[in-house]
Image 1 (cartoon, one colour):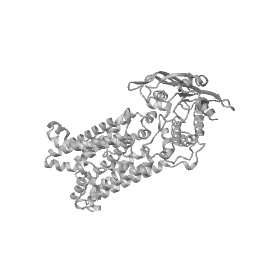
Image 2 (tube, one colour):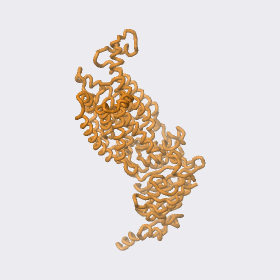
Image 3 (cartoon, each protein chain N blue to C red):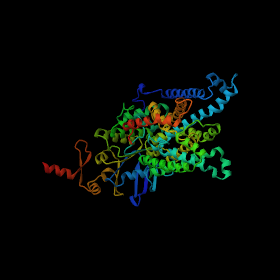
Image 4 (tube, chains in turn orange, green):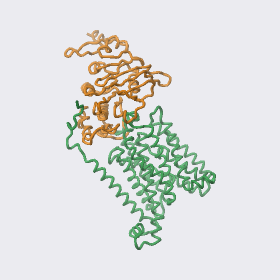
Length: 270
Length: 359
């Protein structure tokens, strides 16, 4: 089971943002979409989730996403936007509960009562239930929204079919501990049989958590495949237009990236 | 493998008996509405006493023809018009606020009422020039239908101007509402200039709003469109809740956003048009009532829309009671009362919302 997008073209006015991009993500994996600012990664995610008009095809679990009923699609996948503002003074619990009303409900009344609290605990916001959403910090808001989309598709596998979590820069406003917590949640979701597609800025977190990586460069696919094949000095230095070198962190041997320029400046200072 | 192990973090204190509380609140509103309605029936010219009113109301022994006429033919249409118009304005306000994602959207503020009033004025002043078969077939329905059409066209224009690439700009919407309100106001002014004395009396009443002129025929001509809105609105609760997160997020949650918007605009324009047709422009009910309820019970549209109808009815009846007693035996137009209460309230909302809503 997979999410497959083929020959995706997206234009804003006369300008084509994505030029026949093809993309695939498998259930049971975290697939990261990386690339420089303005390369089209978020646009690709928005095309896959049907938020922007596009030409090409998108299938979710072998079903055409463009012809699926909205309820069926919402039952199969949830989307976390970059930022969400709210029009009314909703409390945190009320926002998370909205996830229960999405698509076709699969929760029993007991589960429906407990799930929002559980989800809030999973994103590190236990005890925030009664707080007003508008009064939270950017990072807290982002985690409340994550709890909401987790509640929407709380079972990673439903009737033998994987469900999908689409995340648009899920850790952009989080501190380092919460970055790890949220990416860990995404990895757990994939491990439990669901599929995760995440637009990522942080290459180190991508190297740490992604099972597959698609690198978008100026509206094209620059490279796609296992992290070791995509996150290379050559690909990244070319895509981002600055010298990047991969190193391995001592204890676990995890790869990490350091911009060469920063290093040189640092050495010069010494 | 279970991704969520439910019940792991839930303590008994977090579970609330929300349903029972919601029901109790709704019943309180229902009872208050009935009580206010009965009080209103015993107010006014003719001075039938409370017991006489009750006798006439239920056709009991001892009810005189005079009392029965006063209660059933004079007071009842007026009171029921107040009930339905109050409900229509409050529910329409709540739906518009949900649709535009703005707690300050109100049919009166964004020009929908002005558009509806213009439609009604066109029907009053130019209706006599319409072909006889149209006049004959529409009858009493001509003014409410024209008001509905005026409200509908204004709402559609507003939406078209304020929506770009599927996103509705709140700032553009409010500004466009002011512009459209000014334009329809000017057009109404031109028609006023050409109106006869008798038509002018009818027109003056639109400016201030009043339930004093309510009759059974006017009531029945406006009820279908209002009832439609009151019946349809609660079914939009889930969609309006999702829409609070934005149109894209609502679509991701399985809401047919465009379809829902079309239904909301049509029903709101219909009910506001019908309300304006029978009572003229009564401001601020659509903004004060939903806001008060959000303070009491939170912004969830599920309980909000039904309670808006109830509290809207109560508020309008109370305003009517004030309008009849404050300078008795004369009456102050009800629109003046709602504006005196609503204006300062609106300012208070503005100040309060600076911290709780991030738009």
